Image (cartoon, rainbow, N blue to C red; front, side):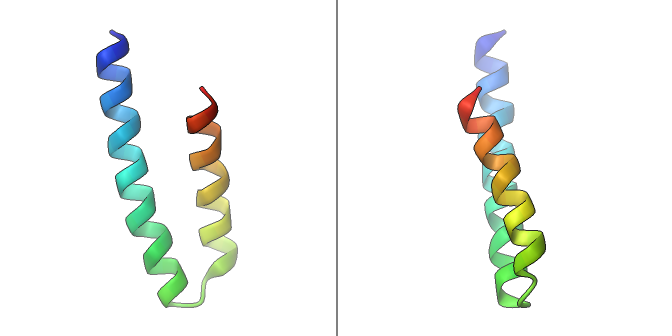
Length: 45
């Protein structure tokens, strides 16, 4: 259902945001950018 899809997406966003913050703290910006691109793809859907 669309609702389930939205929930999954929101979970992904939360998790990836945490991951991105972790990467930034460890100066792993290349990896953070990769995740941000993935997040953007999900936002567009």
